[in-house]
Length: 498
Image (cartoon, rainbow, N blue to C red; front, top):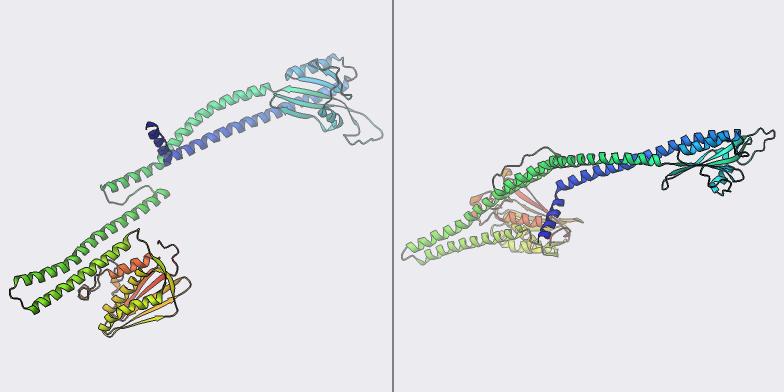
């Protein structure tokens, strides 16, 4: 259990943005130090080898001229030349071999190969292309520099015999094969590497300290935001969060404050909704209780009075039932898990079916109810919910209309959407009420709404059903002239939750 707990703690640490920021800064700094270390050492090594090669090359060219001057290749007994060869070998802790044009070793400072014939591709090439200068090769693994220096004699030739190799008056008489030790360079590099390692350790400590300080300083605002959110969660405050003006934290704060405002609005709306529901449900019950108490307190009540009171009670029961049914429909649509039963529906036939049920109500008020469709329309929709949209809009258009008025339903479509308009010649809606008509239990004319049996939930139900289909609903109204509701719904259910 302890191992599992410790493993979870380590995982939690690596989930921390502060820990990740610290690791990124620290690793970046350490890798940079290591790269600089390697680059500097490599640069020093290349530079030191280049300087050593140039230095030895200069000495070897001078020595090659001396070999020609003293005719050393034919008579290798010159004490001066031998001393120079030994001094050069000792000076650079290396080895010098003098090879003539017959590939025979005339002199070897190690006294190993003297008098032997050496067969080497590099030596042969140097004899052929001597005028091209010294050739060098650095053997890093064995720690030495090998140089081949041509021994060139300049002759005066009357007839120019231009060869494929070199100048016509230069003749390669032999080769100086020299090996120079790089132990001093390696020793210096080791000293530099040790010093660099010491400096790197100090820099690493500074980088780690810097990374810790920077990660703490830069991410501290997030800790303050978290603390403020926790205060709001615990209920200590409901004030918006105020934080430092960083772009990242500012965006988070704005988003959270917007969410907080939205939550306040929802909370206020919920409280208002509960209050309205309580009031709407209590009103019919109060009316029924008054009617029932009136009957109970009277003796020898005539049957006509009983019938009248029971009729009123029945009306109140119907009203209560309608409110409850509308509330249940609205609650079902409010659920985030609520889905849509999508089928392919003939929108014109569906609208005609709803209007058929509405015509008795329209006829009662002498309302002319008509349907005009510009084309056949088939859409993928939830038939039940869209029928609620049509029914609520048409029912409102009939109930809040004038006697002998009209309600016209228009249908049209394009390749993506279908459009429905419900146009009435009713009393209209005041401009200041247009922003509130979709609120639950909101009524423009409360006295008339209750009189005609309105619950104030019809437009809220219609709007929710439209939004579930990823559609839109709009309203235009002129007071005293009429109202037009425009609904736009997609023909296909792409992106709609089912």
